[in-house]
Length: 71
Figure 1 (tube, rainbow, N blue to C red):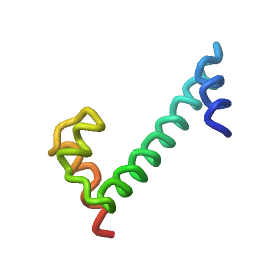
Figure 2: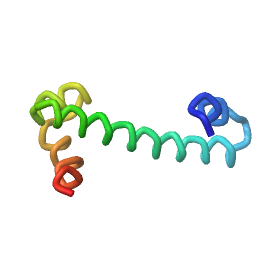
Figure 3: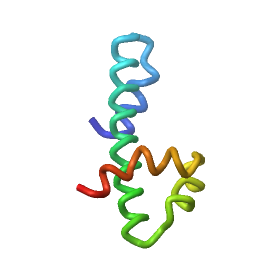
């Protein structure tokens, strides 16, 4: 499904449709965040800069993404 279709489905009155769309959007959001964090690190961004852009603490951003970076 495309993002716009998922957003529309998230607004569906049927809870099964809405909840499935929310889960799919959450997965997509995680993939997008990981891709952008990888890009930022490749461009020399610090964990502090990334955390500020995401609105989280540096430790939270590092804990969530650092393991994936060493793969």
